Length: 177
Image (cartoon, rainbow, N blue to C red):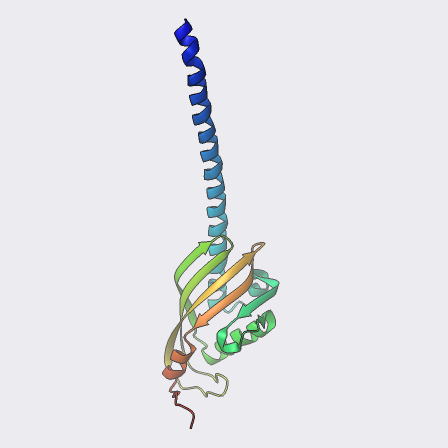
């Protein structure tokens, strides 16, 4: 009987230790699942954005972006572009490339950010700034990092192959004289 009593505290301590670890592991698993669910929802938001963009549904963009959304694009400078200016640029692209479609190549989520690598393909059938329509079929890649806040896109950082697109359109890059 004495042996049983002496072992009992050890067994109880062991059970308590493993029981706590199971609770900790379950809490960690629950947190991991919650984060994975949020990340999947964020990726679905970006998939929906690209689907609606390809369908030229400009009205849905108001629902997908936060009202104060900011857009960063190196060729536009370091100051963010407003949502309104971004909509103007989208419309300009649609006018210049009426058949333009964006195809998602990679989609990665980490917490509140989603990284999307995509390719835009279209035929240059309208003016693109000062470049008159050429009829040339083009494609250019881009990568965006989107910050999601409250289920909406709050910020976008985009790097795109604008130089490659200009070269496809027949533009030349020469050093200044």
